[in-house]
View (tube, helix red, strand yellow):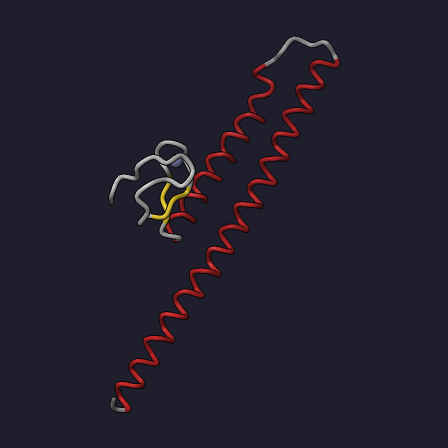
Length: 121
Ligand SMILES: [Zn+2]
């Protein structure tokens, strides 16, 4: 092997390692962002519970309209989390099981959660 070849080979190894590390760091960030969204979602559910409890305590009629800002907020956060998870799975080379929603490797033939056949890409 010539020196040039050795240098080329070393460069390849380095670049592959760098790419893998970069992906892992990025995945960590995405996971962190998802956990932040999830704790915000938990807060929104708390707000909904508190508002509902207030109605019960005051024996007020169930007023769906007054809860709408909170339920809209929850729907929005659920959508954001869904989207962030999809992004993460895409970068991890995973997709979502069409049957149960579990994240599955793109090269798996079956879902490890429900056993459904994964459609080949
Ligand atoms: Zn499944």
